[in-house]
Amino acid sequence: MKQLKWRTVNPEETKAIAKLAAAFAKPGDVLTLEGDLGAGKTTFTKGFAEGLGITRIVNSPTFTIIKEYNDGVLPLYHMDVYRMEDESEDLGLDEYFHGQGVCLVEWAHLIEEQLPQERLQIVIKRAGDDEREITFTAVGNRYEMLCEELSRHDNISN
Image 1: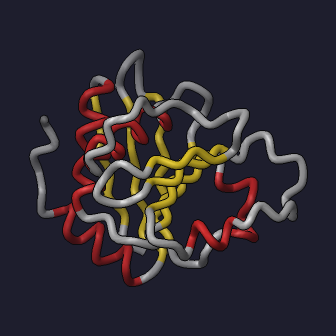
Image 2: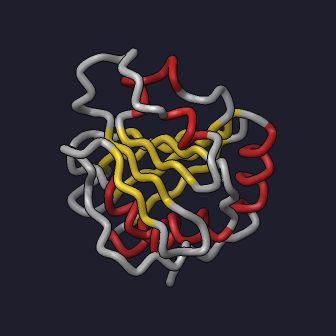
């Protein structure tokens, strides 16, 4: 498994990493986001959406579970499964995971059994007030290649 790590000092740098990842996104990509409350999962998603050219306001889908953004170069399906009552609840997630858009899944460990085997796992940890450590772990060939491509880009600034 290939891993990439970044340390960011502000939300703008977190967004810049996400924008870079979005530049290489393909239909059917699944990115899982893990981190404590307030770690920066939604900040990452906002940057990713900007990278896809999405102009709508992006916020956490905490109470709706899935928010769809269709105004970018690819559809973005932002999922927050924290409040799913039953891990086996059928929300038609497979249709999203294998669809024409990109899925970003917050709290993905709660639906581990429903996730595709191949995915990009992203963990965001606080490293200070605004500092974050962001780790990408590639699970599968598609995401190994994505991490390889991302590793060639040292400059994450806007």
